[in-house]
Figure 1 (cartoon, helix red, strand yellow):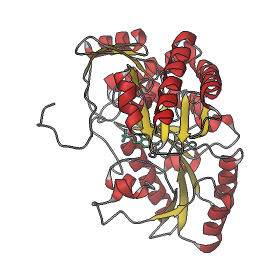
Figure 2: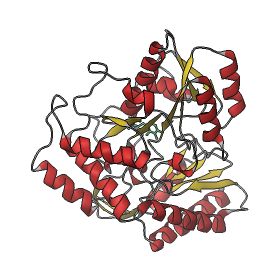
Figure 3: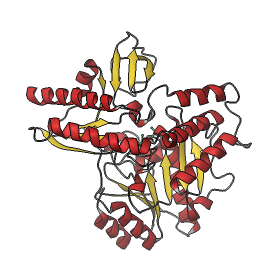
Figure 4: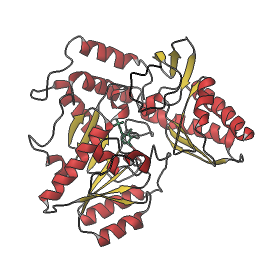
Amino acid sequence: MSDALMHTYQRLPVTFAQGEGAWLTDTDGRRYLDALGGIAVCGLGHAHPAVTAAVREQAGRLVHVSNLYGIAEQEQLGERLCQLSGMDRVFFGNSGAEANEAAIKLARLYAHGRGIDKPAIVVMENSFHGRTLATLSATGNRKVQAGFEPLVQGFVRVPFNDLDALRAVADNRSDVVAVLVEPIQGEGGIRIPHPGYLEGIREICDQQGWLMMLDEIQTGMGRTGRYFAFQHGDAVPDVMTLAKALGNGLPIGACLARGAAADLFAPGNHGSTFGGNPLACRAGLAVCETLESDGLCERAAQLGERLLARLRNGLEGLEGVTEIRGRGLMIGIELDRPCAELVTTALEAGLLINVTADQVVRLLPPLVLSDQEADELADRLNGLIQAFLARD
Ligand SMILES: *Cc1c(COP(=O)(O)O)cnc(C)c1O
């Protein structure tokens, strides 16, 4: 591969030329079943006809103007997202990190409005929020931060899925103004908190006057079986961030807010040249329409059950398999040993998967899988993991 690119990624030795649904074809014409979807981005699969048609039409008409002017597609997508989530207002950027930057800035404005000069935001161990300076500082992974010190100040870290730790912060500190948390930790290893966790955070936030801010960048847009993961329970956040699947591959991120948090930004406080441009928003609209018209949230829930059952059938009880867990099409298979090399053996076998947190096989397949494709995915992966464990 070319040496012209900075070495930010350890790339696998494959280049794709084309995609359709859950399948990718490489430059040599080999086909791969894609169980990663560009890391939860291509929720509707590759080259979805509705997104392709919308983007083609929009690209031929108007790609960009500027946020100095009205943008019809941005207004439509904003309204649609507010309807789906119960939020009041949206700010559009171009990525997950930018969406979280907007959330962090909202929390700081909120603090200053309350007379807190040096506010803190509670964040979790093993979290991931992005690679910009503020979001890597919020991230609970030293590998993401190392080399980039000094970090941005104003974050307090507690263990994930631990309400007592959050209560202790509430009891001991008066500078906290918000909690930022993933409803299911993605990069951290598909960690699903206990039932009632988000409701517990909501209750503490209400008692303390903190903003509850959910990073739904990986979990959002139908992935877990609801439009947003918080909709599995009763707790509604004050701020929610989206990106990944929002544009099915077109770069777009969004920070949504409700109540007081929705009124914080005033002209001049925040902005983005590209954010919310007609092309990206048109893709987002096509994604929302297709999720709805094709019932893809329910489909993700069904497919998730089907995949989990088949994976458990093939792997549960095997020496070396610690846990198989998931919600909708966000699935993790935790082994008792590092298994990064499974990514390469799977690639050679024509299957695209990912390993995160060293020993968790992560699946984020498109929501448009057929039952047959889901079964094929599970059977192939079961074989690969069985062979990997037998060999070690
Ligand atoms: C991917 C991800 C981000 C960062 O998104 P980028 O678009 O890469 O900046 C932030 N939070 C979560 C939970 C993510 O999964």
